[in-house]
Length: 403
Image 1 (cartoon, rainbow, N blue to C red):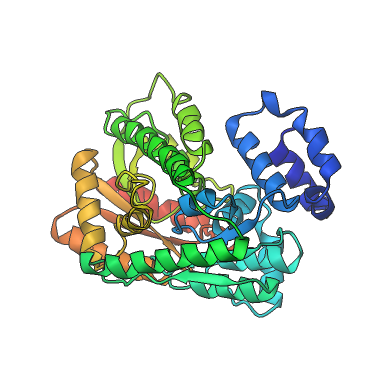
Image 2: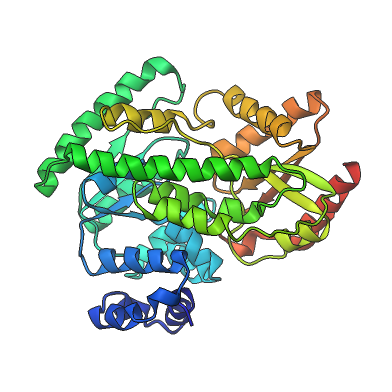
């Protein structure tokens, strides 16, 4: 039994809260770590540092640059990513129901509902600070502000103008300068040039690993499992700035299949995927579909420069293609279609994501004008109660017939 299976079992019987805070449990489990894959070892270290308070804990939103957290000697605890992990273990519904009992409505993003359910039931470590941005997600900063009030800790928000224009970068860069000073004062520690050198070196190494995967996604047939690429989005945004980033992606890349079956269809996937166990991706594989490009996995940032840390952190945020007018997102999709030799697009309309879902209809119409097939799948990334599989399968089969 690995760490994930043990945690799943303890979540089911209700004993995970004491396990996560037990030094004895971590001492015992550490004996078995050498034989475990890098993802399990990383998860062990993250939980150990956070729940045993070995380092200050920062709750972070997905697009907050974790390089800053590592440079300050903190441990990032990305709640939206943690919510995805809980859902992948088939354990989402009890936490979603707990949040709903406390008046968090079902049309609220399930990443945030599940995170609140974890907090309400005492399954989260105690943070020293909450860090988030307004980048892409309209509800994220409200969720993280609510968490800061729940835990009675400071919430620092980086406001990113939605226009995505170059002249707005100075505004964000100034915010990072102020934030670093505030965090240094709060934590009674200083970031040094050595801190930035180390964090940015690991971030740049991760970027190089991702570039290798991007090149493989251009191959016909494609050896990169598309559902796994989307599953690694959390790794990218949690591990940027630590040694785990390049190590995890490198280990994953080395396990790509050598004998790749022939493809019938090469598609681009927009937004995220359902993370709970479902028949969706086995069905697509059975139909010969390869997902050869995604919005967030391949959306790389410029190399980080330790001589200009605030500018580098800002540039990373502004490299997100979803920032700014819908044309930015469309241009990214068109580039992927050409680069990856893809013939169509699937947009997953995650129920709680207003901006992505609303933008999806505009993108579909723009693709329709260019005679590019596009399918919108309605559903939820974390809540299995929202999956109508028979209806979804029928729509996918009709779409594949059009292709």
